[in-house]
Image (cartoon, rainbow, N blue to C red):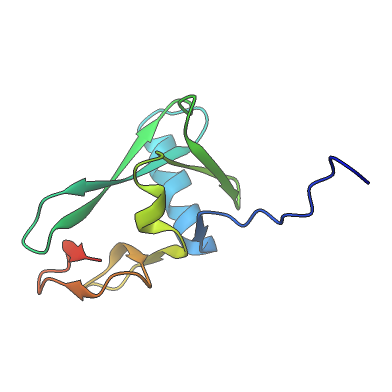
Length: 118
């Protein structure tokens, strides 16, 4: 069949159920009707890059949109190559808890855990 794509699209980033549940809860607490969590990679930090998470009302025209457990995750085109293959996780432990991007491309993370290099 000509014109039929056999390429399988894999999500840019995986999301654990605990991360989705926590993000949805926080999104609703902030008054968002639809839980859209933006993951962005910014230049800076002691190791070169850092992650920024924020809530938005809808995706932008060029965003990669990932649906997981009722959560919509938005990743801008510039961040995609850096986070591709990663998983967004949430851990509610007292020390070291919170959201974490488990990125297999990160070759170094700073001691504080806030920045990384690829």
